[in-house]
Length: 577
Image (tube, rainbow, N blue to C red; front, side, top):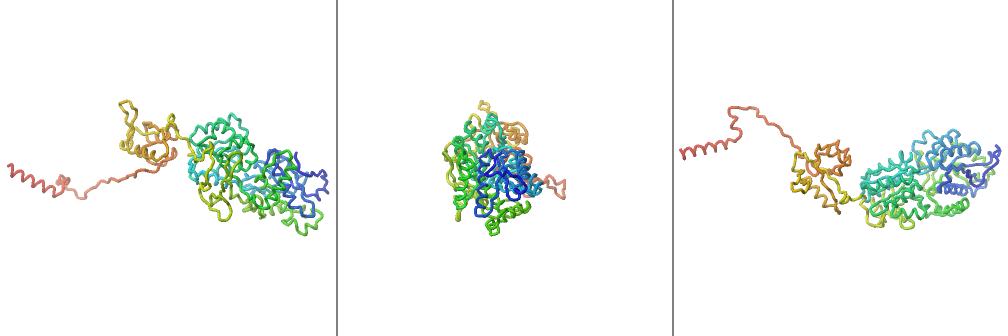
């Protein structure tokens, strides 16, 4: 068990009545957990440094990311140490089970997990989610995809419940709104072997789609990029885009991982680093982190440390009714006032919080902390990365976030991007077929209208000759492409429904024919825009109301025609008679 600062060995009732304690449950096997611990301690010290009473004692236990250990730690903190609240719990499984303990004990549980579903507070009144929703980042990712007009992407994600039921559906929706779709979904478990990971990535490499979106934890992402570079997926024409779960911790990656990520584009949480509040925090955080972990390499505090600081500040303000420096507290000699606050009151005060935190505005709307609206766009280059701009929800991309910033829906505004394989030219996003593997184009053989598509088997041994209006349209379309597209026509003897179905079965890459666009065929593939009018006409049989059958023979010619014929016959009779 890992404990912070001072641990109170005296557990007598009298001692409980004098000492205010706040519990922390963190995964101290990770760098995030260690940063969160230091940040929470700094928050307490900052808030109570000018108050003439003992500051709360922070008691931290190490869950190691295990929900069972988290529950056990929560019970000990509540029953033995009588903590006023518990802060931490980076994952939803930990939060889920510890929240049940908090409900039974009426002790507030302040979670730092960004995976907490919106419905969780309906039956867990003592749970407060103090982490910002990451769903908006998927709009930023989709905006990047849309900027370069990539129509298909592969999604590689960590196969955990929160990703499957939470963030991935938001990504799919955002991509659809941007006019793109997912070609392949690749779920990966954290304990995946190197062999299985290599096989999964090779399957993606053998496909045509070259745009990869990665949503995973930092340790799994490091394995993915190391393996991807080894099998040649960090070369020219490949595109890699990552989410905040990876880029928020990129400062903790070692040089070997960074070298494997050259050209990667990603989104990172935004927070202002120019404010005096942040600069003061960074100085105190640096000292506290070195005090607690003097053997650990120091990095710039990540956004998760800032969120932990803001959460602990909200708890501390709730315990002091938001005025820790007031005269009533300056004149206090004990913590009686803070100890008398009920769990319901603490939750109520936290939910009513409204202050500018290190990670952004800390206020709740309908029980949910305001979500992130601005993200940094970063590009991995050389030994580190460069910030090429920002994306703001409902506004788009910009080079800055201050007043007077110019916004654009396309990130081309931000200038050149360093792509994998060192090119500055924009990858097309999909692999061109080679002459060894040309596109297979299905064409109908048993069609009725040969003027559209006609398949002729050449008697001179030159193979199949395909011609017709549809083929001419296809050939004319290829001339507009900026590259050569190898292809072959493959005759198909069957119905049009069966022909279109071959695309779904991946027997053909496309079909060129006078194919009618009907509903059930949409399940098999996408259709081009119609290049000819449907030409539908209606044929009606005309019936004469009064028909004299004796004179029916006169109908083929008009009256003037019959007169002409009669005159000619009379003339011929007179001349030759």
